[in-house]
Image 1: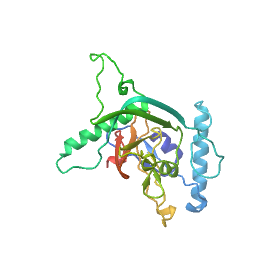
Image 2: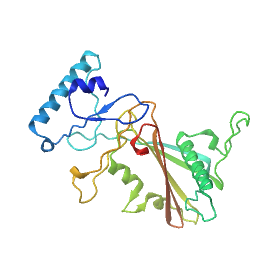
Image 3: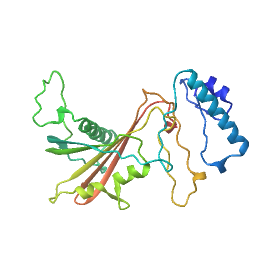
Image 4: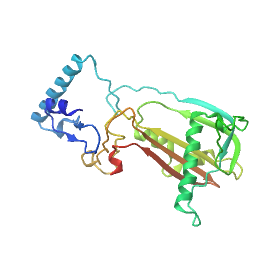
Length: 260
């Protein structure tokens, strides 16, 4: 929220300490009653009523709240499927090589992340029969590559951390890429791309570790909400001869606490 609104509400919060960004503040209101005194909860309730009246005067209407957890109904989100045939599919070599420099490894992995993004978009440049004018656009899939088919599965919504983990992991440390291992000795790979809600003050909410109480959880990293912000993660898992390897890349915009 802006400094003017923060001072009007009178609730203790935290200023976003990023250089060069608009002055904004974040307030944290726990939903559990036992985490704050009666007086503090009353001040917070009064501040929210004041905020609601300010929004009503501005014509913003009621809040649109996205949440994950109990206390609400279950909404079924169906995945969208798309099958692409005859596309160039790279054979990702994710393990590090002793003969490879840091720059070469970063360039190699960067090309794999680029391919994963284009595959999610269904880019025509990946087609084996692509006949684009080389003066208009030129793209070459990472080498070595083979011609094959891909399946794109898309969910859209606020995803619970457990749901995301269930997609990427099965039975503890076993990756789902091993379940799609072909009968021959060829390799298979799965790419998972996740987008954060950039209009929120946090990119994600850390989950509780086993045996750790909620009160001692790590704080979610703060950032400046903006529709122009960037927060995308790409996980590539490859399986060759039953041995999964993985690589994770993140694209994070400015004014984000994860930069330190």
